[in-house]
Image (cartoon, rainbow, N blue to C red; front, side):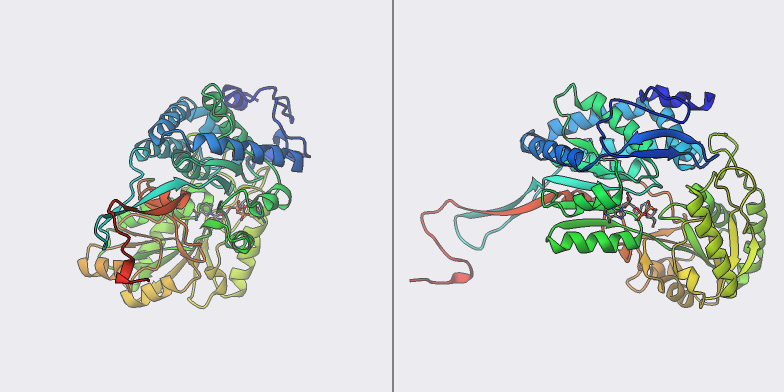
Amino acid sequence: MAKLDFISELGIKDINPGGFSTEWLGSGSDLESITPTDGSIIATVKQCDSGDYEKIMQDATSTFKKWRMEPAPKRGEVIRKLGNEFRKYKEPLGKLISWEMGKIQAEGEGEVQEMIDIADFAVGLSRQLYGKTMHSERPGHRMYEQWHPLGVVGIISAFNFPGAVWAWNAMIAAVCGDTMVWKPSSKTPLTSIAIQKIVNNVMEPMGWAGVMNLLVGSSRDVGEMLIHDRRAPLISATGSCGMGRKIGGAVSKRLGRTLLELGGNNGIIVMPDADADLALRAVLFGAVGTSGQRCTTTRRLFLHNSVSEDMTDRLVTAYGQVKIGDPLNGTTLMGPLVDDGAVNDYNEALKIIEEQGGKILCGGNVLDGSGSFVEPTIIAATPDMEIAREETFAPILYVFDFDSIDEAITMHNSVDQGLSSSIFTGDMQSVERFLSHAGSDCGIANINIGTSGAEIGGAFGGEKDTGGGREAGSDSWKSYMRRQTNTLNWSDELPLAQGIEFG
Ligand code: NAD
C-alpha cells in the first residue's frame, strides 16, 4: 500500500483496503474506482442520485447570479489562486491519474501541468474578453458588441484525460463568468474527487463554493438529467463519436448549445525527404503514448514507398524495446489499458484486422498476469480495411504505403473523423500542399511534429465526426459566452437602417 501515499497527500482521507469514505455528498449507489495496473479496488465512491443532482444544479444556478457580476479580472484572480493550488499538488495528483487511469507518471504529471497552463491562460484572458466596435451607417450612432456570461455549463469528460479536459473547460468558463457542473467518466471518479477537493480548498474560503461543482454518477442517470436540463445552456462533452451523436441530438432538441470534442483517427504522412529519426520518435510517442488512448493518438501511418521498408523495420525494432508495466515506475513507457473492457476491444479489433487481411508486424498479444496490459501493435494495412476507419481505443497502428502526396492526402482524409494530422517533410511544396484548402481536413495539422501533445494556446478540436468544437486557447472562450450587439443613438433623430423612410 506504500504506493497509495499520494492519495492521503491529496486530502482524500479514510482510505482503507478496498474502501473509501469521506464527507462526499453522494447519496446514490456505490461506484468502485479500480486501478488497471492490477485490477484492485482503490476506493469506493458514493455516487449522486437525482436529489443530489437537483441540489447541485440549484447551487450552480444561484451562484451564477452572483459570479456573473464579479468583474472578470477578479474572477481571474480566483483562477490564479486555483492554478497555484494545482502547482502544489502536481505530483500526487499526477500519480493518482496514473494509478486510476493507467497512463505513465510523466504523462499523469504532464496532465496536471496542462491544468496549470490553462489556469494561467485563463488569468490573462480574464482581462482580454474583447468585443468589437463597428461604424454605424447612421449619423450620431455607435455600434459595438459585448460578451456576457452564458450560465451553468455542463461539462462531461472522458476517462483518458480525467483532469485536463475538465480544466480546459472549467478555467475558461469560470473567467467568462459561468458556473459549472462536471460529470466525469465513471472510470475515474477518484481523480475528479481529488480535483474537486483542491477546488474547494480555494473556492470555499473565498465564498465561491458553488462555481465549480462535481456530479459523480452514471451517464444513464445524472448524465441524462444534465443533457436534458434547460438550466444548462451549454453542454461541453468530450468522448466517443457515438456519445456525441446522442448528446448532440438531445441538447439540440431543446435548442441548447453543445461543444463536442469527439473521437479521432489521426494520421502521419512521411515523405521521402523526411527526417526519419524525427518521424520515428513522433510516431512512437503518438502511437504508444497513453497506451494508444489519446484522442490524438497516431492510428494511421502513411509511408512513401521509398522509405516504407526501412521505416517499418525501425519501428518494429523500437516497439520491441517499449517497456510495458507499472505506470508509476519511472522506466515504464507504456502502462495498461484503462480496463478489461478495453482489452476485449483490442482483441476484437485484432480478430477483425486478420479477417480483413491485415498483417500483424509486431505485438498483438495480451500480457499474462493481473492488470489490463497489451502489447503495442503494428499492422501492415491496405486502404480497403474497414476496421482502420474506426477508432479502436488501443495501441494499434495501421501502416499504409503511398506513391504520391495526393494519394496520401486522399487516403488520410477518407475517414469520418477529423481531429489531428501531421506530415514529415522538408519540402516546401509538400508542406503547403498539406496545409492548403485541398490538404488535411483536420482541426489540427502539424509539420514535422506528431499528432498528439497539443499546447493549450491554440484552439483544440476537430472536424467531421470529431464534432467541430474548439476548446482551450485562441478565441475558444467565445463558446462559453453569449454575444450581444448594442446600437446607441446619441443624436436627436431616429434614422432607420438601410435609409428606410417610415411614415
Ligand atoms: P465515452 O463516450 O464512453 O464517455 C465520455 C463521457 O460521456 C463519460 O463521462 C460518459 O459517462 C459520458 N456519457 C456517455 N453517454 C452519455 C449520455 N447519454 N449522457 C450523458 N453523458 C454520457 O468516452 P470514453 O471512453 O470515456 O473516452 C474515450 C473517447 O473520448 C475516445 O473516443 C476519444 O477519442 C474521445 N476523446 C476526445 C477528445 C477530444 O478532445 N476530441 C479528448 C479526449 C477523449
